[in-house]
Length: 486
Image 1 (cartoon, rainbow, N blue to C red):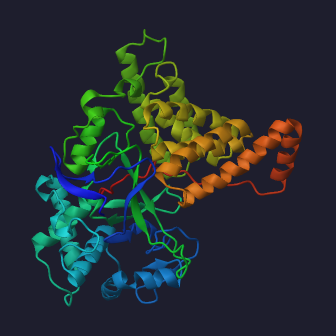
Image 2 (image 1 turned 120 degrees about the vertical axis):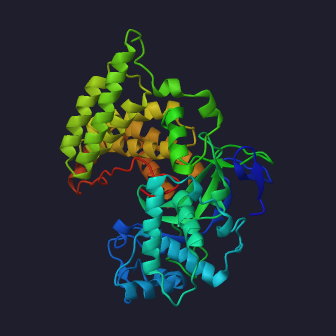
């Protein structure tokens, strides 16, 4: 942590600034979780140590609740799981994820005290909890969580005051960091990272945060790494410059982003993009050459899009994907004569439609919609945005499945250039992407040498193997930075 220092950021409170010069792709710091837990709905599908998804997990023989990849992960978890294991056995069931995380934090404080721990610039005690800003509904939820916590907390453990427990629950509410699986596509847990909590928000940041599950399989090898978050640089940072990350997805107009940040994190965003409304015009763009479109017509189309999104969410959660396709096609019919190529309501429908069509193996149609989507993303997102890189990767794979090898290879190369910066060369996603890029490059050479033979060989290869099943679509468009209790 010698490369950063804490300072008072104007209008923001504490922040972090660089004490040396950084370049794109540099790791400013890596931090292990102070405490972390798997989401309630995934406790039997995700390892409770490294947060990787596995088909077969080993269950804790005592509490029957915690699950692990292998003995290595189980042994590594025992210090944090020991007290939890005993409490779950006595209670007969595990409480919700917020209570489990609060308990893990307090058991660690019981062991080590609430002061600074090794490698931390700030203590858990001094993190913001924003309890004083809670509305009536949030206060009600806090009281319910307090009751649940007191039922779960063992009488033989150190007893903490109600105000202190409320502080910990408040810290989790606004500072819990979202943990993803090894593919980086699904949120699977929540953790507290004290140093990360000091990094302030900017809608157009100079850093990004990536969760790395680590490598627990080679305990005695040089390649053994622990689960951690990494603060990585997106663009050159000078000495003394403040480090910033984006707490939310950029693809919302400035007013909506400000409202979301105020509601979820209790501050008013004063970044340049919000103050000047940068890119708002693109996000609400009308179709080029269609100046005659009235404001009323645009409002109608946007309202129709919002209503369609609600129906789509219901159909997706029910797994009725052909209904999702039908709804999206109807919405596009209304949108395309009115909305511009960078309009966020058009892009949201294109994103869902291309993903679901890929899952249904309709790659020819999916490739067209996904190409239209990334063309819009490229004009809106930061050029080194992780979500842009992931979208390009998915679009490249869709094009490859559709037999559009040249376009697919080009997108995979663009995605690789972005993920090298945002994720680094050793991250599993980057490694997978590199393998895809190399394979598509070899196929492209073959295609350029003899197009007829390439398609013949491709057809024969596809006949002799099972069709690759695309991952099932989820309601998560992107993994958010911080996990707000829903």
